[in-house]
Image 1 (cartoon, helix red, strand yellow):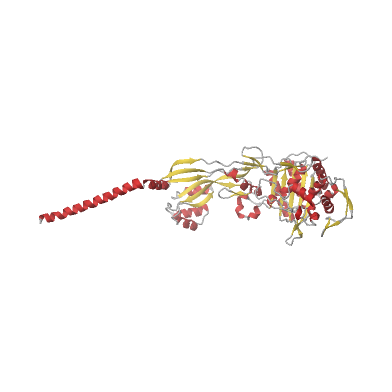
Image 2: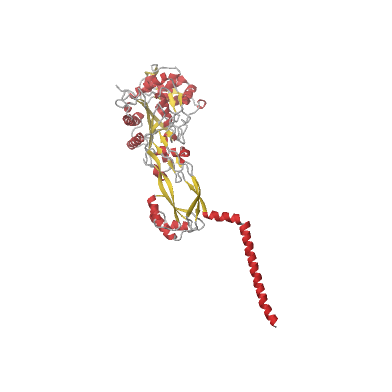
Length: 559
């Protein structure tokens, strides 16, 4: 009986010992399995939980005007974020975001309630002072990231040219978009080790960012601001739909001003429809009307079919196929020279010259002057214009194309064509970028359009437009000789004809005519006070020219 009672505890001890041995064996086996078989994957998992690679954004390059005035810069901003899994007091975080960052607290609470997420922005690119106020509250789970936001110190000045960059500092429109590869730079990266509370304790790998390069433009901020001011004034006075101005150096192709009215504040681009931010001087077309007569006359002179003194007997009205062409004001049959045809803007006389050329030669010269294809300006979205090839001309086309109807051009195309005449017959590609970083000055591509002799004759003939008796006398600038051309064109209507109430008034001029320094083009879309280019657009040219000549200290040349 004693042996039987003693065997029970022994069996229990042995059973307990066996269980302990088994547990030890299982623990040992798991240790071997974890350290041997699963060691590497688990190490990677642990490392991933304590390591994080973050992007180091590159600073976006600044944009300057030709004199060094800042047009687009990067400003310091602080992005405030939270890790919902580490936030201890969601309500306090939501209240702070509402009071200091302008967020709806209920929206913030909803975002913080999602514990599957480890990162949410409380405010992207907040004002640094507001972010610092949040930082002082010492909220657990809230972090801060220094970033850069795009700013336009001059507000609306050159907004249509500059365009804008988005929240991620990527160019979305204008030169910001065109030059994005240059301005954006290359982001870097940084791999950090964090403690269990998510705080960075060590940087183990870093690739430095490469900041974007600065860009210097051909624009002059003072000329641009004045152009926008003058256009805004004429818009109010004429009650027009829109207006544009191009100020171009004909010798270099540099655009000194490229203005559109109404303008907008680039800092608030998100509040406007994209249509309001288009640069109409490059992206939109218009029928040029009588300003296009220079091309017809230039082609006739270049082909040797006439000289400025060649005279034609011209009735008030002529028939061309199924169309009747007449001059803008009733008159008797007269004899006019080619110079008078241009200065008095005779439709009948210009069509007569077009008929002498014939459609194929005229079409060739239109293409030669650069119409129907992009100029190649360094700006996105350039329109090539609307020019029908000769084989698609109707019988009446020779009656409207020579006088600038049935053809559509951009303001920059037309300004570049006149600049070629002003530059002794040499066309220079218009451009906005003067220099990138510390690189060389940008030079525009060149080609000869007409001979020096023809160019000189055309400039002299254009002077007659502004002199007494011409259609552009309102473009005169005291102390300076001016050569230019007025334009008044009916706008096409939906039925395929032309409106009797909607017009585009324009003027293109060269000053000083004796030694051209500037080509200035003005278009007024749908003016209501008066429709004639010589009445509405020519005075705007005079205002722009007067300011620019004084500002650039160009000496007077008139005697």
